Image (cartoon, rainbow, N blue to C red):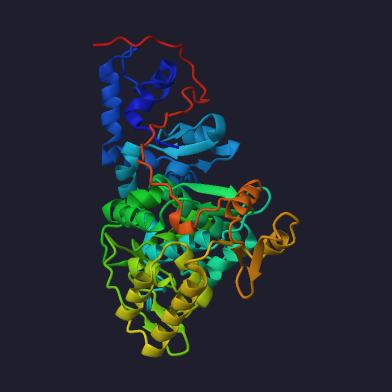
Length: 486
């Protein structure tokens, strides 16, 4: 939910609430703009806020801290504490789907951070940082490859499958930082929502999510947006704690810190998830028992190595644009301190079917100093593929569909399966008949390389309406008064 400013909030509260709790003992019984301005000015004074916090219990202070840390997602509050928290006027309550959820004021965030800085404890250097710092874009490429290769499986109810999140654990750095299915579902939400923000289109058919947009174009746009404002992207799409509020709590980037355990008891899991996402995106360095904030990630890219046994060793500091091109010929198998890949004949053939040229496949491997024997083998695969299919009408199907096509009465006389591939040779002169029959089943028979991928759509940010409870449940003795404008 988009948060509101304190000065807007108080002007929409009932006047008896203002008179009872905010206007002061010597205030006029008539509310004017001057009274509202004076109230707002008080709340932007550090001493006033410090005094206000000193008058409330530690339990309420911790709740307020956690509400601000939760940012746009807010925090559910028990009915026992609602009135006490509302009386501080440091937070507000949502309505509708956000009923019982409390949020901090956007314009009070900075001054509250100054008062809550003591909730972070300075730490000594804590050994080496965890792995996978700043590998967001590389993992992003690998997840996009899962979309392209049909591994992005979903359940019948549309939920992400356990197998898909298991693949993240096997192949992606984030799958080593986060290991629960629920946390990795949030990562997939992040990738898809951010991609849609960048103009990408997806479809959910045949039990998987497929990307319909050009991956190279999307990757460029994603890189550009992250370079421009990574904190905003993360705050908007990743379901983390408020990066800006956390950043305001820390005065010195050079020091390692950790949270006081009591201050985050109820949202400890959210904080743990968030710090790992910030580390993954290069905005914090995570250690075993502490963390250090960073203004911006500085990356030093490294090339990978192609071994004579077709294995590819890919450093986690790989240039994501190069990684995307390596995947024309290589399948990611696993990740530990590096990404492990394997050059794969089927992957090369799929790239050719998808319109990737021989030059594009080989060029990136040459940059990575591929052994001549491996390059020669790949070129033989390419030439073999071209000899078999370049000048012939052919149709490719997934292995699980091919037997049904081969056994169909109308098609088996005019389509001949080619052993070793899920391809069919079309009987000369029967091309139109075969295509028309197959189109009745809903198949799109254009070659993948000829298909018009959807262009990225221009993103238009939506202005979210601010919805909040304008009549907080607080006891009052006064009746409502009418605002008189100066």
